[in-house]
Image 1: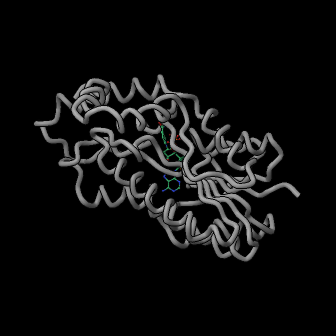
Image 2: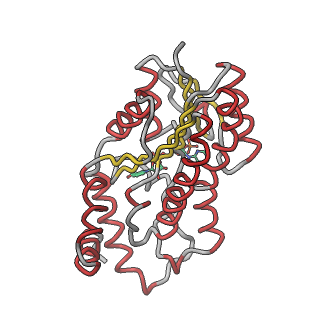
Length: 265
Ligand SMILES: NC(=O)c1ccc[n+]([C@@H]2O[C@H](COP(=O)([O-])OP(=O)(O)OC[C@H]3O[C@@H](n4cnc5c(N)ncnc54)[C@H](OP(=O)(O)O)[C@@H]3O)[C@@H](O)[C@H]2O)c1
């Protein structure tokens, strides 16, 4: 019987590419969007989901299990990237970033674990980021959300392993998706950061455009699903592979100079 897979945030970018690839490969795929009626599906059954809402998460997972009878793999992908100076970001805006990128994933995991534990099998795949290893300027709370996802997933790995459930983190570098266009900035802009924010945003936009295609991340997710015992961390793309290694071996000032140059800050 083909496995049932739920991909959150499948209306765009990495989630859309992943859901499509998995559907092409014969899996039974459910994808989510906050407005599923306006999201293109191509072999993917779209379900409404807002990961900020307990009720929406409960209803989404219940619909998948009702339609498919089971859920084998959860791909936690939904997210956005708040790109503003840390000082410009209100605590409410910072909480909102973590509410989607971190607690959204936590809600989904909590909703699927009872079924996976009962089945004695399952895979949780959390889409993290290079920014979960090495922080990006003007992305303090995005980086914080991904660092949080990294620590949470590593703890969870130990806890659910005895039930036959694997937890994997996918860590892409820059991926060419519309994530910046889809993401809000902080409402407050402080003139002191204007010049640096402007050059950083230009560099960030350029890095995304030059990033790997979302299909490359999708292929890595497919590889994880195909493995009987997947590992905890999977880096995708040259940046995500080399930068964390470089950071461990070169002095901080040298590494930081490279990051400052890349982001023009
Ligand atoms: N692009 C990159 O360079 C990059 C690099 C590393 C990691 N990532 C990670 O990859 C994931 C996908 O990013 P992307 O680049 O593919 O961005 P994207 O194209 O903007 O797609 C984001 C997806 O998340 C969904 N989403 C946003 N807020 C949501 C919410 N509250 N509830 C449910 N779904 C929500 C969106 O769906 P709707 O708006 O339709 O609901 C959309 O399908 C994110 O976790 C991101 O942090 C991206």
